[in-house]
Each structure stands twice: as C-alpha cells, then as structure tokens.
Image: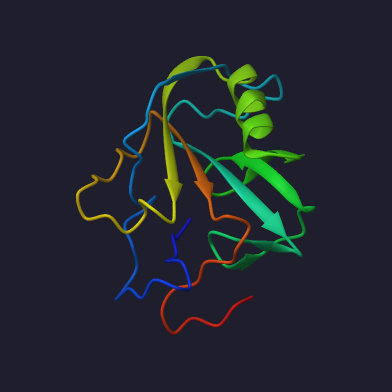
Length: 140
C-alpha cells in the first residue's frame, strides 16, 4: 500500500509506508484466520472505503463502503460501520500481539514520529472520511 498525503497538506514525494505513527499505541491480540490467511509476518491495516475508493490510498476498489481490515495487499474482512468495529474484528482473528498505531491528519506528516517496522502492528488510518491524495495526483 502506498500512502498518500491529505489534500490540504502539501508534500513532496511519497510518504514512508505505512506512514507516521501515533503516540497512542497499545497491544492488540491477533489470531490466525480460520480460512488460513497468514498475517503473522506483516502489518495489518484498517482503512475506509467510500464510493469505490480507498480514501487513504486514492485507489479504486470493488469493496463496499465502510471500514475494512487486511494486509498490505488485500482486505480480509469488511465492511464495518466504524474503524472500532473493524479493529475489534481483526483482534478476534489474529493469534499474535500487535501494537496499535493510529494515523490521522494530525500526525501523518509529523516529522517527529517514526515509521513502524514492516510487521507487528495494526495500523488504523482515519482520514476523517476525506480522500487523501499526493500532491499532483488525480483523485480516483
């Protein structure tokens, strides 16, 4: 997943994947899915879809409107009415401890935050139901 910047905040180039972390983090228990989605070697993401577009990524998707969770290349479950419900479902389907990271307009471009490692985290991206696009990128 290639991250994008909020439309009201200019940026040069792409932000690191998956972006900047929240100062608020805690452990999220996670189990392997019954249908054999192995998520133990990667981060999980909770993202919002509206009108066929993943708001954080500015990418088209056939997924229904709502919040979805999954890996960096596919949704596993969704839609849910809120990020909290998607997060709770992800917790029920994982068998390892994951740190929760929250990305939002207030912290995604903050240079003081560090990039998370490529595994061991569940990352909720809250765009405030707005489409985020990179500088010069055309909205999907």
